[in-house]
Length: 348
Image 1: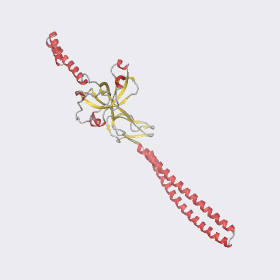
Image 2: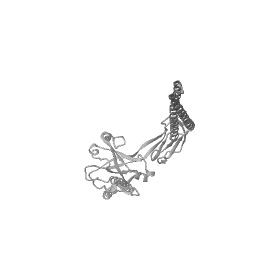
Image 3: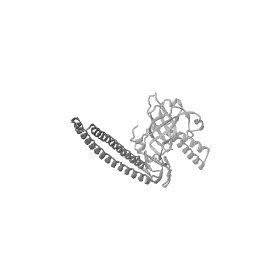
């Protein structure tokens, strides 16, 4: 490359004189440097069994939405903020829910009082049944001795049966009261869940992409408040023809070289290979390339590596992915694909 540049400069100096020759030579140096950088980035000829395709860094979007209809009380997150799972992002107004839960708790207390009352009734009916049982037993003895009539015995039997039925009814009332307590407590828990859900928390580690609502707005159930970029799932989508995609195995090793930092290679893993071909999207090279049917492949960056460089992670950055084909003895990665990000401690 240096010799070619020298020859080009000599020819330029021969054809042009003075300052014009200097300008032309400088321009040639710049062009040569760009060509050299391109070749260095791509590594020249790749070893057999390694294929490449361009793409861009992507991450899934996650909407933070309300579970129930209500008014937005406050939003603590701003666009661009980095958030962790569980971080509070916004709160909904819960004044009405707080009133409902107080009412439900009061109903639960009344139901518990009814249980105590029903329990006392059961004890009362048990005592009445014991008395009726004792009187019936004494009456049966007197009837055998002929001291009382059979009609009196039938009356005592009726009293005993009534006391027994009253006890059964009291026990059923106790069960009903206990179930009422369970129902009232369940209602308290249901409303408490809605109160808890009124605090909107980050479901994933990510960055706030859009703020879709403002305090004071009334949203329906499922209303979107914020949109996050899920930085726990950072990947690049690339497209390969069938002859290459058919030899890409899930879990195989890969490398990503980004345009802004071409001197570093990011280790990655193949996590998805589309089962069917499609026309490639607009961002892939030229229109002629888009006319071809290609297979979509997802190359994921390790989560631990993303966390180490979380402040620098940006979606939409373009680059090139290098993938190994299955069925071929893996050749060593070229030297330019072994250059790691600054800390260089990530596992391959």
